[in-house]
Amino acid sequence: SDYSQEPPRHPCLQINAKASFSFSIIGFYLLEPFNAEPPRSALVSSYVTPVDLFYKRNHGPIPVVDDIERYCVDLVGLIETPKKLYMKDIRALPKYNVTATLQCAGNRRTAMSKTRKVRGVGWDVSAIGNGVWGGAKLADVLEIIGIPKLTSSTQSGGKHVEFVSIDKCKEENGGPYKASIPLSQATNPEADVLLAYEMNGEPLNRDHGYPLRVIVPGVIGARSVKWLDSINIIAEVCQGFFMQKDYKMFPPSVDWDNINWSTRRPQMDFPVQSVICSLEDVQSIKPGKVTIRGYAASGGGRGIERVDVSVDGGKTWIEASRFQKTGMPYIADDMSSDKWAWVLFEVTVDISHNTEIVAKAVDTAANVQPEKVQDIWNLRGILNTSWHRVQVRVGH
Ligand code: MTE
Ligand code: MO
Image (cartoon, rainbow, N blue to C red; front, top):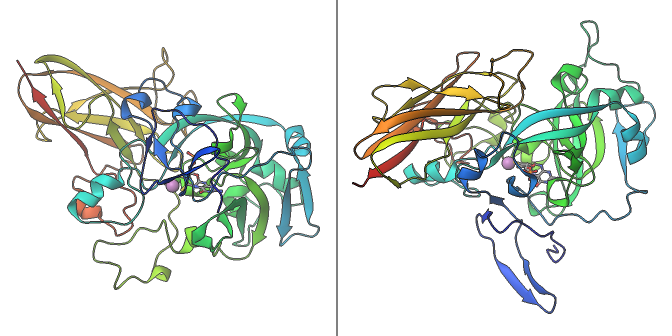
C-alpha cells in the first residue's frame, strides 16, 4: 500500500496508534492509515466542527480521484438494470444540507483500555465531530433505479444496501472498505441518508471522502463509507470485515480466546454520550468560578433531554444548559433543532478544592450513560459511553 500521496493535515491533530513514518527523496510519508483527532477544547469552540480539525479515521491510504468527469458510482445487485451515476447526475438531484454528528465507535477507547486492555486504535474523546453535509438523498438516488421510497405500503423485503469504497485496506486483504444499511432505512427520506459531496459548504476534501461519501446520520461512523465506488443491493447484510469481524458489541465475559463473531449483530445506532471538553484530565485551576463545557449526542435521531454535571465525583448533580446554534434555545426533538446533531452544554460552578468533575447525558428515550466503564467493557473497546470524568487540582 502506498502512503506517498496523503493530503496535508492540520498540525494540531493528535495522531493516534502505531503511526510510523518513512523517509524518501520527496520527504516523509506514513506507513499506516492516518488516524487523528483534535484537542478536545477545539470541539466546544464551535457548533459545526471545522473541516481541518474534524477527526480523521482511515483504514488505508487516501485514494486519488483526479478525473472527476470520469468518476461514477456503479449501482448494481438486485436491480433490473445496473446503472452508472456520474457526479453531474448526482448534482442534478435535489440538494440537501444535513447537520449531523459523526462519531467513531472507538471514541474514548483509551479510557476503556485502562481497566483492561482492549484492541484497536487508541482514541481520547475527540473521535467525533459535527458537520454540515451537502448532497443528494440516497432515497432519491435509489428511485432512479426503480426502488420506491419507503411508505407504509412499500416492502424492503429485508434487503440491504451495500456501500463499496475505492480505498484498499489490509483487513479486507487489499480489497475495498465496505458496509451496509437496511434498504428500509436507505429508502426512507426521513432517515436523511446522504451521498454527500460537500462538508461545511465546501467540496469534500480527500481525507473525508472526495469526491463522494455516504452519511448515515445517527449511526456509528464506520457505516458512513467514504470515496464511494459502488452501491450494491443485496439480500443479506454486508459480509465485509467491518460489518462481521469488527464494530460489534460483546459482553465483558467475551475475550479473544472465546469470541464467536457470528453471535452478534453489526453495531448501527450509537448510544447516548457526553464528554467534558473544556478541561483536560488532570487540569490545574484557580479556586472560584469555572465554566464547564462539553458535547452530548445520541443515536437514532434521539435528542438530548438533559446533561447533568457533578463537581463531587457523582454524589450530587446540577443541570447544564444546552444549545446548538447560538442565540437559539435547544428544544430536544423539536422541528427547530438539528435532530442528527450534537448539543453543546455549559454550566458555571464554584470549585474550591481538588475534585472530580463528571458529566452524564440523558436522551429523549430516557437512556442514560452507564456509570462505570467496567460494566460495558468489551474486547474491541467500542462505545465507551461511561460517565465522563476529569480530575481538577486547585492551586491557591
Ligand atoms: N470509509 C472508507 N472508505 N474507509 C474507511 O477507512 N472509515 C470509517 C468511515 N468510513 C472508513 C470509511 C470510520 S471507522 C469512521 S469513524 C468514519 O469513516 C470517519 O470519517 P472521517 O474520517 O470523515 O471523520
Ligand atoms: Mo470508526
